[in-house]
Length: 184
Image (tube, rainbow, N blue to C red; front, side):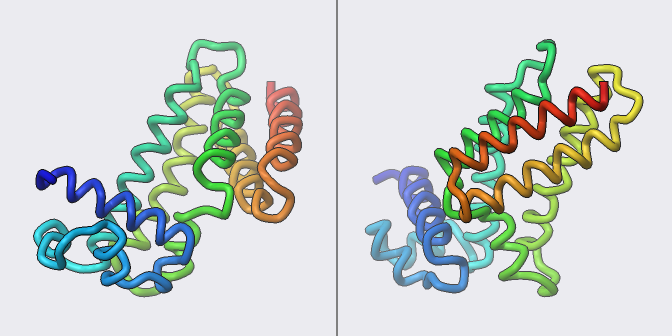
C-alpha cells in the first residue's frame, strides 16, 4: 500500500468508527487494527488522535459541500428547495445515525481545540451558504431566510435519528416550500 492509500484507509476507517461509536468510544489501537496498518503508519500521518479527528471532520465537510454543490443549481427557480433536498439525501446516505459535527461539538465542547472549531465552523458555513444563496436570488430578507433554512436543516438532521430519514425528508421539504413561499 502506498503512503497516501494508507492515509486514506486510516481516515476512512476512523470516520466509520467515530460515526458508529463516537469520538471517545474509539481508540487508536482499534483504528490501526481495522485499517490493517502499523502503529508507526498512523503516527507518520497524524500526530495524535485529535489530529486524526480534525482530518476526518475536514474530509467529511469537504464531501458534504461537494455533495450539496453537485445538486444545487444556483440559477434554478428554487435553489433553496434543491439545497434542502440535497441535505436530506446526504442524511439518507451518509448521516442517518446523527450528525458527526454535533457529536464533535458535544464531545469536545469547552476544550478550546481545533476539533470544536472545525465542527462549529461547519455549522456557521451552512448559515453563510444560505445567506449567499438568498443574496444571489435578490432576496431582501437574506438573513431571515438563512436562519430559517439553517434551523430547518439542523432540525431535520436531529429528527432523522428519531423518525427516520424518509419522514424527516418529507416534512423538511414541505416546510422549506412554505418558507420559500412566505419569503418571496
